[in-house]
Length: 345
Ligand SMILES: [Zn+2]
Ligand SMILES: [Zn+2]
Image (cartoon, rainbow, N blue to C red; front, top):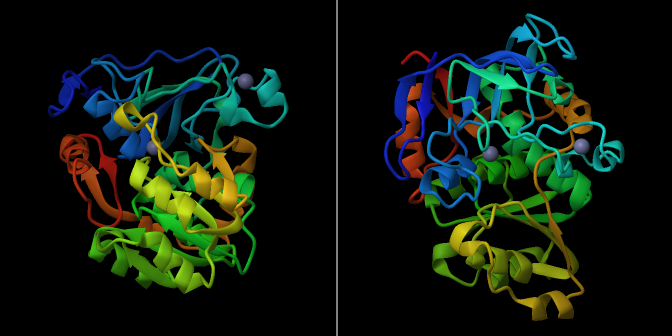
């Protein structure tokens, strides 16, 4: 099958003909219908992601159709499925408590085992997968493997965002746009922050009530002014010290910061304003992924038509276009994300 393989960090992926994956006993092989290119893939490509090594086939934000099912699989041939990027074991204490995204036995296609920058991907623990709703396009559904689900869990499972609250979103990439759209659907008033004016305009067109260009400085003060005292909830979607501090400092007393961006490599440890946390009686939440039992609530919201996630996708690309998308993350990116829908070009 055709796959895009990481051979050398920071160099174009190698498009190769590789063996099709073997079917796991407790899972399936999917023919990949769509796979997003995510900032986490970029972390792997730069060599900063601690687990991604040369030889890796990336791609963790995918949906596909079952072409092979193992004897212990939950799903069957022909099923069209959405996969969360964290595949939990289902039996450990974390899983049994419903916190599958913290499962210590988790499997991670695209990071440790071969991912979906390929025609086919092997998916163990297929009980984590959800059926692709009929009225949802695979291109949009790919985001339900990582960015949309991560944002949904950040807002509902971690920060418990309430209607009428102010939500600040720092960084309007895939996660940030997801948080914006979901936040609006939840009845929050959303302020977006970015350094790319075009992305701020795009976000305002999607319903952001206010936009702050971080390049002009003083992000926290501006948000406090716009919101009359600070945001109730703030999402950091980049994993950088400057945006993490702006996110913490823009909160009102008792506000909730959610770390969604992945601090990795040189930002894995960072200096943050703990005085603001102390004085503001703030809560800091970390979040990663989403337990798959939350798919029904999210899919119900999307398929009801109350929220349109399609503005998230800016362009559909071929497999050979992934390298350019990864390189683009080296600098400020245009609005929206790229999704591979053609694995033969
Ligand atoms: Zn991702
Ligand atoms: Zn588990």
